[in-house]
Length: 338
Image (cartoon, rainbow, N blue to C red; front, side, top):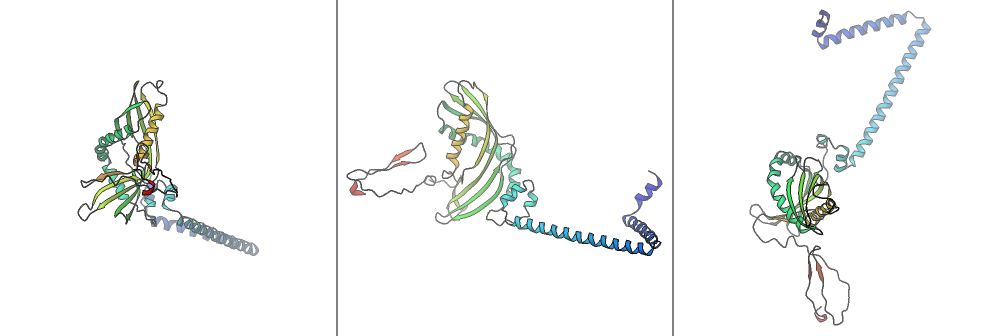
């Protein structure tokens, strides 16, 4: 490094600014001196042209500023009518920016839950994998049909990415004295999720791999049988409020695919049917907290509307269907007892 470069690097910012101002002043003085040496008519023409240029530049700047402020006002007016779901679609990767947006809906943003769930996810998935394998195997065996004789869950891996909680809505059911929580769950970040399923048939055994889960739903937790003693509720029921967004990929790992065609499709339909019938409302899963009999909670009581009719010396009865695998017939009443 030369002596001149070393000298310039040692100068402070205000010293450099002072030197630049001095150079500009010297150039301005030289320009005025050159203009003063010109004829009088040329000086008037140069001054008028310079003034018009400055006026046009200032006027154009004001127009651009006005248009910019107008665009900002229009954008703010449009954003004021957009809900949180639309903002998340517009800015999917700007969680910090969305955190500054006031939430005017009744859904509360609970990012602290996501932070805690992310840290505890390795321990939660390890503790719940074995239980989920047993429960999933029981549910799937209820829906086996056709050539499928038995289903066994060989392995279950929930992946390294935990579900994301978008919001929580709390409300109270005054008629049944229940407290309900609706949780928006988003589990669309693919990781290494995997389920290995052994499908037993009369001819051979197949192994199907299910991976790349995409799952989005609104989960409703209902705290029922409220009491005055801790934990203030006797049981928790959970269900999915509306049909969720579910997608996954299945692949036949072992077994002869030529013996039974469409084994992967059969497993896909079985998993979707079992999930929809077992978890989607009005079906509910009950988790007892205090020991007791809670069988009536998960039963669905339908309302029957009968048309007016006049049976003549005939018995009246109804066939009651609860899910597709269970039927029941009511007692028969004579016409005089109706």
